[in-house]
Image (tube, rainbow, N blue to C red; front, side, top):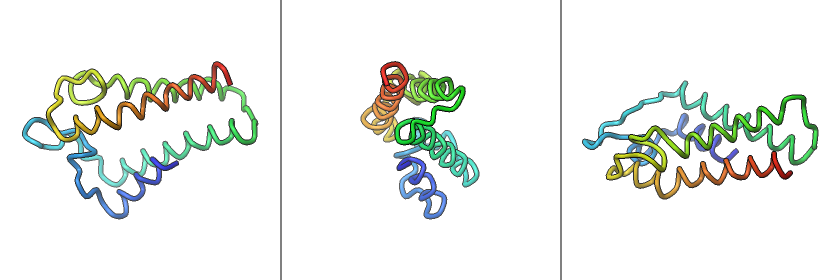
Length: 125
């Protein structure tokens, strides 16, 4: 929910230092400019992911197919951890930009931890 809220913060107040949270090339040019609609989409998606786990953890109201949805979400975070092999994830080639350093130190490890926790919840929960 925090990550979803962070995206909504960015929608309303902007990103103070976009090169720290969005991939850039070697020259510092942003490789993506998601805009407000894209940022809202990601924020809403992250909130929906959180609702699925709140449902599973608090109410134990397992809906039909919720395990498959949960595993798909875990897979999305795992793919985010692996990355695109160029600018994003643990296996990126470009490691000198500010985003790349933040990604290696914070974003990819966070995605990996979320993925592992989801898989633990589904397979041993």
